Length: 300
Image 1 (cartoon, rainbow, N blue to C red):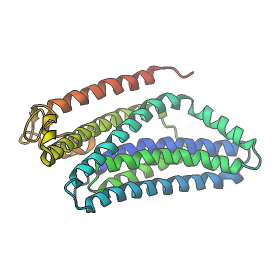
Image 2: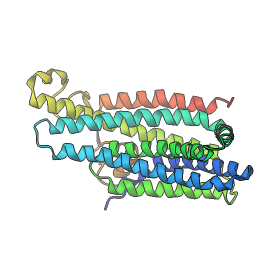
Image 3: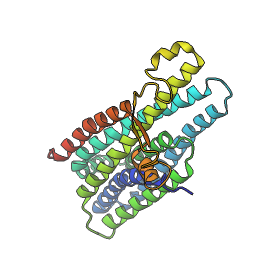
Image 4: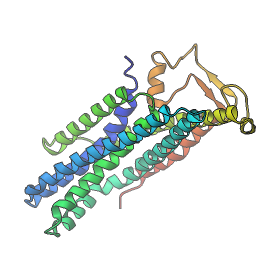
Protein backbone atom coordinates (compact mmCIF):
# COMPACT_ATOMS: atom_id res chain seq x y z
CA UNK A 1 0.00 0.00 0.00
CA UNK A 2 1.32 3.42 -0.99
CA UNK A 3 1.48 5.72 2.04
CA UNK A 4 3.26 8.55 0.23
CA UNK A 5 -0.11 10.29 -0.30
CA UNK A 6 -0.27 10.80 3.47
CA UNK A 7 2.77 13.12 3.51
CA UNK A 8 1.27 16.32 2.03
CA UNK A 9 -1.89 16.07 4.11
CA UNK A 10 0.25 15.51 7.21
CA UNK A 11 2.20 18.72 6.47
CA UNK A 12 -0.95 20.76 5.78
CA UNK A 13 -2.95 19.50 8.78
CA UNK A 14 0.04 19.79 11.12
CA UNK A 15 0.45 23.47 10.32
CA UNK A 16 -3.26 24.30 10.11
CA UNK A 17 -4.05 22.19 13.16
CA UNK A 18 -1.34 23.84 15.24
CA UNK A 19 -2.81 27.24 14.40
CA UNK A 20 -6.16 26.06 15.76
CA UNK A 21 -4.39 24.56 18.79
CA UNK A 22 -2.83 27.94 19.55
CA UNK A 23 -6.23 29.64 19.51
CA UNK A 24 -7.75 26.95 21.73
CA UNK A 25 -4.79 27.04 24.13
CA UNK A 26 -4.91 30.84 24.41
CA UNK A 27 -8.67 30.74 25.08
CA UNK A 28 -8.29 28.12 27.81
CA UNK A 29 -5.39 30.05 29.38
CA UNK A 30 -7.44 33.27 29.36
CA UNK A 31 -10.42 31.57 31.00
CA UNK A 32 -8.15 30.14 33.69
CA UNK A 33 -6.56 33.55 34.25
CA UNK A 34 -9.92 35.26 34.86
CA UNK A 35 -11.19 32.26 36.88
CA UNK A 36 -13.95 31.38 34.42
CA UNK A 37 -13.01 27.73 33.88
CA UNK A 38 -16.68 26.75 34.02
CA UNK A 39 -16.82 28.03 30.43
CA UNK A 40 -14.25 25.46 29.27
CA UNK A 41 -17.06 23.19 28.13
CA UNK A 42 -17.95 25.76 25.47
CA UNK A 43 -14.37 25.55 24.20
CA UNK A 44 -14.55 21.76 23.87
CA UNK A 45 -17.96 22.01 22.23
CA UNK A 46 -16.52 24.50 19.75
CA UNK A 47 -13.70 22.07 18.93
CA UNK A 48 -16.14 19.21 18.40
CA UNK A 49 -18.51 21.36 16.37
CA UNK A 50 -15.71 22.60 14.11
CA UNK A 51 -14.46 19.05 13.48
CA UNK A 52 -17.95 17.72 12.73
CA UNK A 53 -18.70 20.66 10.40
CA UNK A 54 -15.41 20.09 8.55
CA UNK A 55 -16.23 16.40 8.07
CA UNK A 56 -19.71 17.28 6.78
CA UNK A 57 -18.19 19.70 4.28
CA UNK A 58 -15.85 16.94 3.11
CA UNK A 59 -18.71 14.48 2.74
CA UNK A 60 -20.74 17.05 0.81
CA UNK A 61 -17.95 17.85 -1.65
CA UNK A 62 -17.03 14.19 -1.96
CA UNK A 63 -20.67 13.31 -2.61
CA UNK A 64 -20.79 15.86 -5.42
CA UNK A 65 -17.76 14.26 -7.10
CA UNK A 66 -19.18 10.75 -6.66
CA UNK A 67 -22.48 11.89 -8.12
CA UNK A 68 -20.71 13.27 -11.15
CA UNK A 69 -18.78 10.02 -11.61
CA UNK A 70 -22.01 8.01 -11.44
CA UNK A 71 -23.76 10.22 -14.00
CA UNK A 72 -23.52 8.63 -17.44
CA UNK A 73 -23.01 11.31 -20.06
CA UNK A 74 -20.43 12.18 -22.73
CA UNK A 75 -19.78 15.36 -20.75
CA UNK A 76 -19.11 13.54 -17.45
CA UNK A 77 -15.28 13.61 -17.87
CA UNK A 78 -15.45 17.32 -18.70
CA UNK A 79 -17.60 18.11 -15.66
CA UNK A 80 -15.35 16.02 -13.41
CA UNK A 81 -12.20 17.78 -14.58
CA UNK A 82 -13.92 21.19 -14.31
CA UNK A 83 -14.83 20.47 -10.68
CA UNK A 84 -11.29 19.24 -9.95
CA UNK A 85 -9.91 22.43 -11.52
CA UNK A 86 -12.33 24.61 -9.53
CA UNK A 87 -11.61 22.88 -6.21
CA UNK A 88 -7.88 23.11 -6.92
CA UNK A 89 -8.00 26.83 -7.68
CA UNK A 90 -10.00 27.55 -4.52
CA UNK A 91 -7.61 25.43 -2.43
CA UNK A 92 -4.56 27.20 -3.88
CA UNK A 93 -6.08 30.63 -3.24
CA UNK A 94 -7.20 29.84 0.33
CA UNK A 95 -3.99 28.13 1.40
CA UNK A 96 -1.83 30.86 -0.16
CA UNK A 97 -3.86 33.61 1.48
CA UNK A 98 -3.82 31.87 4.87
CA UNK A 99 -0.07 31.25 4.57
CA UNK A 100 0.62 34.97 4.13
CA UNK A 101 -2.15 36.33 6.35
CA UNK A 102 -1.55 33.98 9.27
CA UNK A 103 2.21 34.62 9.19
CA UNK A 104 1.57 38.33 9.76
CA UNK A 105 -1.50 37.87 11.96
CA UNK A 106 0.22 35.30 14.18
CA UNK A 107 2.59 37.96 15.50
CA UNK A 108 -0.24 39.44 17.54
CA UNK A 109 -2.60 36.45 17.66
CA UNK A 110 -2.43 36.18 21.46
CA UNK A 111 -3.43 39.83 21.96
CA UNK A 112 -6.34 39.61 19.54
CA UNK A 113 -7.71 36.39 21.05
CA UNK A 114 -7.40 37.81 24.57
CA UNK A 115 -9.27 40.95 23.52
CA UNK A 116 -12.00 38.83 21.95
CA UNK A 117 -12.33 36.79 25.15
CA UNK A 118 -12.50 39.92 27.30
CA UNK A 119 -15.24 41.46 25.14
CA UNK A 120 -17.10 38.13 25.13
CA UNK A 121 -16.96 37.78 28.93
CA UNK A 122 -18.48 41.24 29.29
CA UNK A 123 -21.66 39.82 27.74
CA UNK A 124 -22.91 37.92 30.76
CA UNK A 125 -25.75 36.08 29.02
CA UNK A 126 -23.96 35.18 25.81
CA UNK A 127 -20.35 34.71 26.94
CA UNK A 128 -20.44 30.92 26.52
CA UNK A 129 -21.90 31.13 23.03
CA UNK A 130 -19.35 33.76 22.08
CA UNK A 131 -16.47 31.52 23.17
CA UNK A 132 -18.03 28.58 21.33
CA UNK A 133 -18.28 30.66 18.15
CA UNK A 134 -14.67 31.86 18.42
CA UNK A 135 -13.28 28.34 18.77
CA UNK A 136 -15.75 26.87 16.25
CA UNK A 137 -14.71 29.33 13.54
CA UNK A 138 -11.00 28.79 14.24
CA UNK A 139 -11.33 24.99 13.95
CA UNK A 140 -13.73 25.09 10.98
CA UNK A 141 -11.48 27.48 9.05
CA UNK A 142 -8.48 25.18 9.31
CA UNK A 143 -10.61 22.08 8.77
CA UNK A 144 -12.26 23.47 5.65
CA UNK A 145 -8.90 24.32 4.10
CA UNK A 146 -7.63 20.82 4.84
CA UNK A 147 -10.72 19.10 3.43
CA UNK A 148 -10.60 21.22 0.30
CA UNK A 149 -6.90 20.43 -0.15
CA UNK A 150 -7.50 16.67 0.17
CA UNK A 151 -10.35 16.71 -2.34
CA UNK A 152 -8.45 18.92 -4.78
CA UNK A 153 -5.25 16.85 -4.67
CA UNK A 154 -6.63 13.35 -4.14
CA UNK A 155 -10.05 13.35 -5.79
CA UNK A 156 -9.90 9.61 -6.55
CA UNK A 157 -8.82 8.16 -3.22
CA UNK A 158 -9.08 9.76 0.21
CA UNK A 159 -8.28 6.88 2.57
CA UNK A 160 -4.49 7.26 2.74
CA UNK A 161 -4.59 11.12 2.67
CA UNK A 162 -7.10 10.95 5.54
CA UNK A 163 -4.58 8.90 7.53
CA UNK A 164 -2.01 11.65 7.01
CA UNK A 165 -4.57 14.27 8.03
CA UNK A 166 -5.41 12.35 11.21
CA UNK A 167 -1.73 12.02 12.13
CA UNK A 168 -1.16 15.71 11.43
CA UNK A 169 -4.08 16.79 13.61
CA UNK A 170 -3.01 14.41 16.38
CA UNK A 171 0.55 15.78 16.30
CA UNK A 172 -0.79 19.35 16.35
CA UNK A 173 -2.97 18.54 19.37
CA UNK A 174 0.01 16.97 21.17
CA UNK A 175 2.16 20.05 20.47
CA UNK A 176 -0.62 22.28 21.81
CA UNK A 177 -0.90 20.13 24.94
CA UNK A 178 2.87 20.21 25.51
CA UNK A 179 2.93 23.98 25.04
CA UNK A 180 -0.02 25.04 27.17
CA UNK A 181 -0.41 22.23 29.71
CA UNK A 182 3.13 21.05 30.36
CA UNK A 183 4.89 24.33 29.62
CA UNK A 184 7.32 22.79 27.13
CA UNK A 185 9.27 25.47 25.26
CA UNK A 186 8.45 25.41 21.53
CA UNK A 187 9.94 27.87 19.08
CA UNK A 188 6.62 28.77 17.46
CA UNK A 189 8.14 31.27 15.08
CA UNK A 190 10.66 28.73 13.74
CA UNK A 191 7.95 26.06 13.52
CA UNK A 192 5.67 28.21 11.36
CA UNK A 193 8.58 29.41 9.26
CA UNK A 194 9.70 25.86 8.40
CA UNK A 195 6.15 24.55 7.94
CA UNK A 196 5.31 27.60 5.86
CA UNK A 197 8.11 26.80 3.41
CA UNK A 198 6.88 23.21 3.17
CA UNK A 199 3.31 24.41 2.67
CA UNK A 200 4.44 26.81 -0.06
CA UNK A 201 6.02 23.91 -1.98
CA UNK A 202 3.01 21.66 -1.38
CA UNK A 203 0.62 24.29 -2.74
CA UNK A 204 3.01 24.80 -5.67
CA UNK A 205 2.56 21.12 -6.45
CA UNK A 206 -1.19 21.63 -6.28
CA UNK A 207 -0.79 24.34 -8.94
CA UNK A 208 0.76 21.75 -11.26
CA UNK A 209 -2.24 19.50 -10.64
CA UNK A 210 -4.68 22.31 -11.45
CA UNK A 211 -2.93 22.89 -14.77
CA UNK A 212 -3.15 19.18 -15.56
CA UNK A 213 -6.90 19.15 -14.91
CA UNK A 214 -7.38 22.33 -16.96
CA UNK A 215 -5.46 20.75 -19.83
CA UNK A 216 -7.75 17.69 -19.69
CA UNK A 217 -10.83 19.93 -19.75
CA UNK A 218 -9.75 21.49 -23.04
CA UNK A 219 -8.71 18.12 -24.48
CA UNK A 220 -12.07 16.50 -23.65
CA UNK A 221 -13.97 19.47 -25.05
CA UNK A 222 -11.93 19.27 -28.26
CA UNK A 223 -12.80 15.58 -28.57
CA UNK A 224 -16.53 16.26 -28.09
CA UNK A 225 -16.69 19.37 -30.25
CA UNK A 226 -14.06 20.03 -32.95
CA UNK A 227 -14.64 23.79 -32.60
CA UNK A 228 -12.73 23.64 -29.28
CA UNK A 229 -9.66 22.21 -31.00
CA UNK A 230 -8.53 25.74 -31.80
CA UNK A 231 -7.87 26.18 -28.07
CA UNK A 232 -5.12 23.56 -28.30
CA UNK A 233 -1.65 24.76 -29.10
CA UNK A 234 -0.23 21.26 -29.55
CA UNK A 235 -1.49 17.76 -30.25
CA UNK A 236 -1.03 14.77 -27.97
CA UNK A 237 -1.01 14.91 -24.19
CA UNK A 238 -0.25 18.62 -24.11
CA UNK A 239 -3.06 20.80 -25.34
CA UNK A 240 -2.48 24.12 -23.57
CA UNK A 241 0.69 23.32 -21.61
CA UNK A 242 3.19 23.89 -24.38
CA UNK A 243 6.12 21.70 -25.44
CA UNK A 244 7.57 18.93 -23.29
CA UNK A 245 10.58 20.16 -21.27
CA UNK A 246 11.29 17.32 -18.84
CA UNK A 247 10.84 13.57 -19.27
CA UNK A 248 12.09 11.73 -16.23
CA UNK A 249 10.25 8.47 -16.86
CA UNK A 250 13.60 6.64 -16.87
CA UNK A 251 15.77 8.82 -14.61
CA UNK A 252 13.19 9.76 -11.97
CA UNK A 253 9.79 8.10 -12.52
CA UNK A 254 6.93 9.35 -10.36
CA UNK A 255 5.57 5.88 -9.57
CA UNK A 256 8.61 4.57 -7.67
CA UNK A 257 10.74 5.89 -4.82
CA UNK A 258 11.91 8.68 -4.54
CA UNK A 259 9.85 10.16 -7.37
CA UNK A 260 6.57 9.03 -5.82
CA UNK A 261 7.44 10.93 -2.62
CA UNK A 262 8.24 14.07 -4.61
CA UNK A 263 4.97 13.67 -6.53
CA UNK A 264 2.83 13.27 -3.42
CA UNK A 265 4.55 15.99 -1.43
CA UNK A 266 5.49 18.62 -4.01
CA UNK A 267 3.44 17.67 -7.08
CA UNK A 268 6.42 16.40 -9.11
CA UNK A 269 5.59 14.91 -12.51
CA UNK A 270 7.87 12.68 -14.56
CA UNK A 271 6.71 14.70 -17.58
CA UNK A 272 6.68 18.47 -17.22
CA UNK A 273 5.64 20.93 -19.88
CA UNK A 274 6.78 24.50 -20.44
CA UNK A 275 3.48 26.02 -19.30
CA UNK A 276 3.57 24.07 -16.04
CA UNK A 277 7.13 25.13 -15.26
CA UNK A 278 6.45 28.80 -16.05
CA UNK A 279 3.29 28.99 -13.92
CA UNK A 280 4.93 27.02 -11.09
CA UNK A 281 7.92 29.39 -10.97
CA UNK A 282 5.63 32.43 -11.16
CA UNK A 283 3.60 31.08 -8.24
CA UNK A 284 6.69 30.46 -6.10
CA UNK A 285 8.12 33.84 -7.02
CA UNK A 286 4.95 35.84 -6.27
CA UNK A 287 3.52 34.01 -3.25
CA UNK A 288 6.98 33.16 -1.91
CA UNK A 289 8.04 36.82 -2.06
CA UNK A 290 4.90 37.90 -0.20
CA UNK A 291 5.42 35.13 2.37
CA UNK A 292 9.05 35.95 3.15
CA UNK A 293 8.20 39.64 3.18
CA UNK A 294 5.51 38.96 5.78
CA UNK A 295 8.09 37.10 7.87
CA UNK A 296 10.39 40.11 7.90
CA UNK A 297 7.63 42.65 8.60
CA UNK A 298 7.63 43.56 12.30
CA UNK A 299 4.43 43.23 14.27
CA UNK A 300 2.51 46.40 15.01
